[in-house]
Length: 123
Image (cartoon, rainbow, N blue to C red; front, side, top):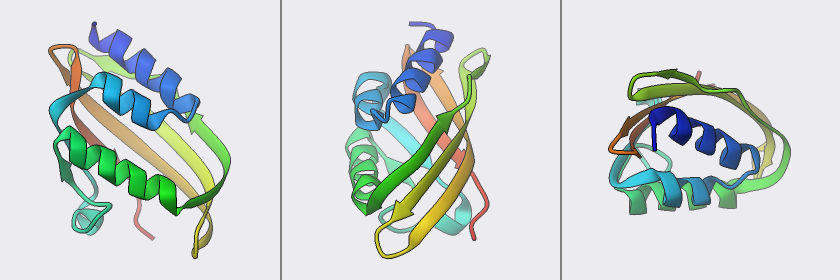
């Protein structure tokens, strides 16, 4: 599967809210997830390996109360890399409504995502 096909499939699944399916289907077993340095530590921080990435996703989904808007841009692809902009307007348990916007950059090798990195302002 080319980088472009991986990117389009990730966008398709994320738009449907099928984040875990995207990770199971498209991520390498040894993939890494990188958050901004202010968020790197802790349960929602950096993760190494698909199992840790899935666990991080479960924790995030459990923290959601209501999703009001979920938008994912078309991917921008360059060789083995692609990026998308994501926008999630959600009510978080115990925190209220939050409007999250980020740029997500992915590295694809051997038809699998081997790295994801998120760029967003920490408020």
